[in-house]
Length: 65
Image 1 (cartoon, rainbow, N blue to C red):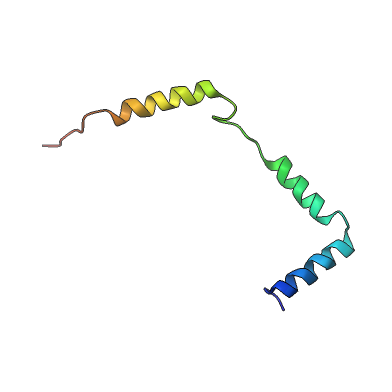
Image 2 (cartoon, helix red, strand yellow):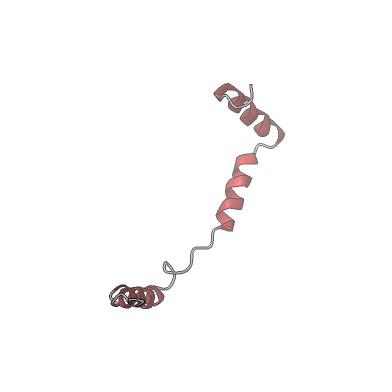
């Protein structure tokens, strides 16, 4: 029954029988693993990066003749 909806329900019940906090522990690990950074944490960095990208995209195309 592996890979079916019924098999998944059985596996979930088995996990909860072994450890009632099984899914809470998994969720906790995922939450602790996330490190939001980069542009979300530093708007000035986003502004600088956007300006660099804007300058590059407006350059004339070079021709290799």
